Image 1 (cartoon, rainbow, N blue to C red):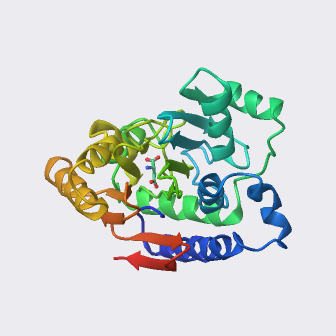
Image 2: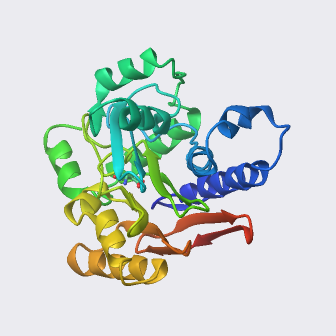
Length: 299
Ligand code: ASP
C-alpha cells in the first residue's frame, strides 16, 4: 500500500505495485538472485520483506532522511519499531532484529543504526533525486501558502522564520498455519520537523498483528493514527467483523473524529483483506497462491 498525497505519488504507487507483482510472482522461482536471501525466510516474512522495499524516502524540513519502520508477529504478539534512521537500506530488517534479538519495542537514531551495523545490515543513500524533487515541490507549495495536513506545525515554522507528502509502504501476510504478520516502512511526511517520529514505528498505531484478531497497517497522517491507535482498533474490530468491514468502520470513525488524512489495510484470520481510506488515493495489491495477484489504485 502507498499513502496519501498528490498526483506524483500515484506514479510512485504504480511503481511499487509493479515491484510487488514481480516479488509475488517470484516466490515460486528458484532462479532469481535478488530473492535468494528472501527464500531463506518463511513465506510470511518473505512477503512482508519484498512488499515493503522502497526507493528513497521523503525528506524532513532540512532535506534529510529520517526513516521509520515497524514489524509485528501475530503468533508471538511481539513487535518492534525503529525510527529516525538516516541510511539503513531496509529499515524493516532492522525492526525485525529489534523484535527478535533485543528486549526493546522501539529504538531510534544513532543507537538503532549501530545495532544495524552490528548485524551488517546494508547502508544506502535514501535521498534519491525523486525525493529531492518532491521535497522542492512541497516547499514551493508551502511558500504559496498551502499548509497541507500539518497546518499547526507549518504555521509554527513560518512564524519562526522557515504540505504534507508521505508514502508509507505497509504489508500484511498470513500463512497456511494462520500465522499473521504486519510491517510498514516510511520516510514519514515531507517537510516534517527534524526529530519527528510518526505512527509507523509505533505498535498499535502504524501496525498491529495478533493471530486471535487480525493484522492491520496504516498510512497517512501519523499523528491521527497515533491519537486513535488505528491499527489496534481495526484489529479489535476484526474480532466480530470481516477485514473490509473493520477497515471501513475504522476510517469512518477517523473521518468523524479527526477528518481526512488516513488509509488502512486489514487482513482477517480467514485471509480476507480490506482497504479503506479518506486520503486522495491509496494503492494496494494482494497476492495469494490460489487467487494470484490483484492490484488497484483506489481514488
Ligand atoms: N504515516 C506516515 C507518517 O506519518 C506517513 C505516510 O503514511 O505516508 O509518518
